[in-house]
Image (cartoon, rainbow, N blue to C red; front, top):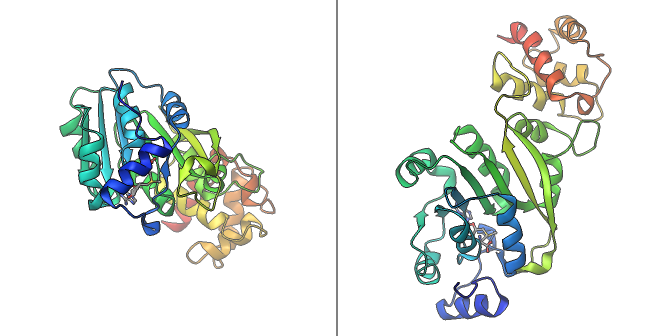
Length: 292
Ligand code: SAM
């Protein structure tokens, strides 16, 4: 076993050797605690036959733990300055591919096809750059990748929204956008002290496991998300008021919206935050003929 990258001493040594300075704009908060890294990886349930996709290897702290647990690791890094560092720190491992790219612009499906042929079990495991957590998750979900799920670190507040249940103040269109595709749970809360530099916010690791079937079949998924976004636009308003102001020509269609709500058994005076995904699905299908 090689010396861990993620000890405070070794991390400082590496940063000094390369004169590396953190870029806040790229969400660079590196992990310096091997126990946290082992915990993150254990939540992914990888085997020696698994593949791991990482976003943002930094200096390779998590990457090396993934390389020890999985058959192959592919890691996307946007910051060119880190490439020579990674070549050095990850040199003991022969099962890591670093892709120099903004993950939001990468053809991840193609990279999986080329780099992970024959690998059936693939997880995304990452300490995400917090400034783009949601766009990264949504991109990777919308890309319909052949993955089992995600174990990812993010700002705790975003983790709470993603995993929220109906009837809570955190529950909103982001909870639905993610829980439509995956079961979602907070796996661990992470203190600021395990990062260098320490972030200003608390962190959490969440685990998302893709559903075999979505929790509700709908005519049009994009329309479901349009309806949920409109329903949460103003949290104090009723679902009827939000749909009237948030859907195109909603005001003119008040009666049809009321009829659709009644058809699916949703009282027009309820608030969006009380509806389950299943109720939103049925509602979206009932509203669909009005707007399309
Ligand atoms: N995995 C390392 C660790 O845990 O110590 C670093 C995590 S740090 C929170 C986020 C990393 O993502 C940084 O290395 C940063 O340069 C990289 N990054 C930021 N935006 C990115 C993007 N759009 N695509 C790929 N990597 C990105």
